[in-house]
Length: 259
Image (cartoon, rainbow, N blue to C red):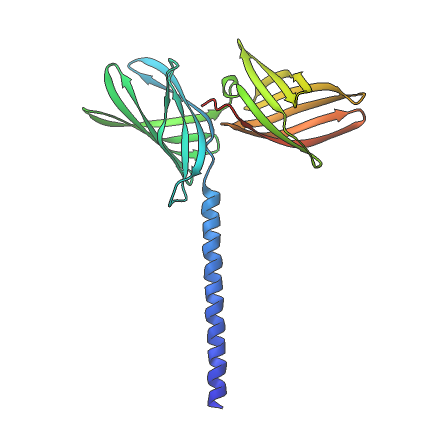
């Protein structure tokens, strides 16, 4: 009788330990998943304005997320800063940790070497933080607020799109150029299809354009609307082919890195 009770107790204890271990493992996995989900994607062009020595400046930085940093859950961040005068500088030590981003670069301002370290928190299309400006004479922290937006210059380049139309996968090349203030685009699929897109424009941070062509005796019209973020884009296509109308999704990546 005592032996049976001991075995029963041991069985219940083993079950309890196994259950506790299983719950702990699930909790750890959930935490890891939540951490992974918490990493934001700050890809895109961020713009800000500031006053310096009585002059108004408008600067920007184009960011794109890289690979996971070794021995870390953080992501590498790369990109290029562009000043109001058009000067471009590669950022260094870029990093994304959760909803935090950081990067730095050096400039020469009025004969002085200045190191600028940016730290901020991303919330949708707003980046709030500080800029630490350091010289041999000392350092100073400044407030920094940037807004992510899409302008014509942000979409210029060659994009490889991917369209999955009910299992029929197409990978056309969209080449976007700028002529003055106007955007132009050429849509190419293989060696046979080359079409100049119509109504290429940016509206509310989205790229829209229309492609029309004759296909097997019918007229096909495809209205593209996509959200470009850095060197990636995704969106939808409203199409009509004869009496057939519908919507499919598309994704894309800029292949000639414009950063």
